[in-house]
Image 1 (cartoon, rainbow, N blue to C red):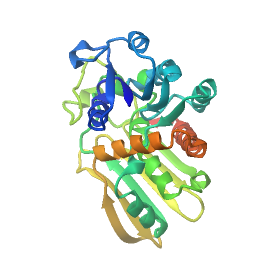
Image 2: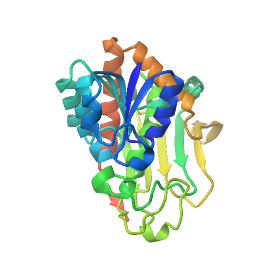
Image 3: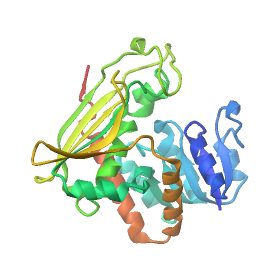
Image 4: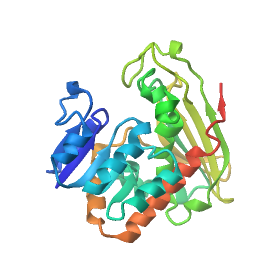
Length: 303
């Protein structure tokens, strides 16, 4: 197996996972300090015929262009969340590359305890999925917090993870869940960011994205509250909380950062199903659903 990793920020994780899986890994990054195999994608592609998988880990505004470029030489293209910019872009990728499979990385669906989470969701009528950090704004002042490059903040960084978990619990009827609340807030400014648990602060950069997001969805019988917050200044709460009959708290399941084993399982499963049209159609429909929901009212940012 040969895999291509484009972008060696978060892409370093994929490089490590793929090497443990025994893949030949080819890396591309414009920064020579990351010690990539190539600093330019065109040269990497001209030096290799085909790849079994490609992993797009560049800044969000480059996802579509990069995926489009690697697709003709790649069997399966994984695009880091939040995928591409729009539903139209997803459809274009698929329609222009009939021999290539595409997927927004939904690694949380391959957690070891995803069945326990799904079963607990079935037994509840109110489920709150939180990804609340004490102070984990990714690289304040870098592309992460520049809307022109990221398309948004925590709504593009963490909400897709929470939606992915919700979909796992409702694989046949997630489309029935409609937004009844979607509130994006920018609570902080760059001057508030004196440090972070993730990356470094660039005080000369841009900070104009949402850093807190609440999405509430219901199908009329069951309700999900998805709450993502980069910087709460409180304790971390990365967990799923289950309720019944309005107020009764049934249990909580802690999540924490997604284990690397889930990434490996995801990649293996996708390779196994490479020729399964039904599998990939389901993945596309999930990606379109996530893309559509996070793009709803995306300009409604409260300062």
